[in-house]
Length: 196
Image (cartoon, rainbow, N blue to C red; front, top):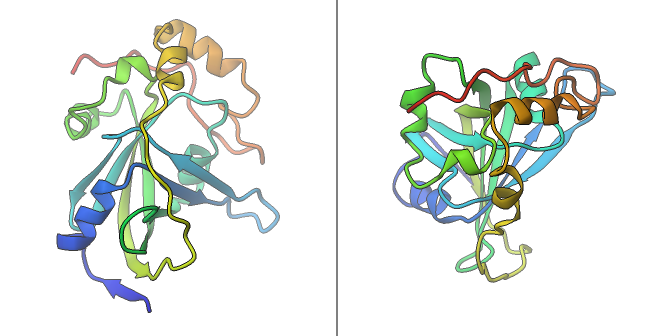
């Protein structure tokens, strides 16, 4: 039923790149810590960097659990489901890191996302994930659903923010600079958006 892969290429890469959404799962090291599971959408926000690495854009939101967990321990699982076509689930288990706006790698990584206008979404980090285990499973129980379009609500909400107002927005949120479990989250104030 399931198969393990050495690399993200061919049919597997095509499947990942074609999905309109994916999920991220992270957890703190503490046994009683809060596990985080997040849906990620917006066409073009994920890129396969090479056959063992993927990256995605981390946009403005009301918490930063994934960033906090990655800063503490780096563990992450990404999952894609086929909601149309043949049933399939793909998981990439690995180590991730948030690359923030003041990181020298920012410009090179941001070029991987040519179809996304980051100024509209309050881009705060690029998450880079290095695969340690790549697996697929059948997905027979995943429902068939039709993708209509990306919602425009996120872009409409955050397009009116500049760097200063976005930092103020994050500072006003309880779980952005610090996670639910008290781990360091998004470093504030945000560095200026790089000119790329």
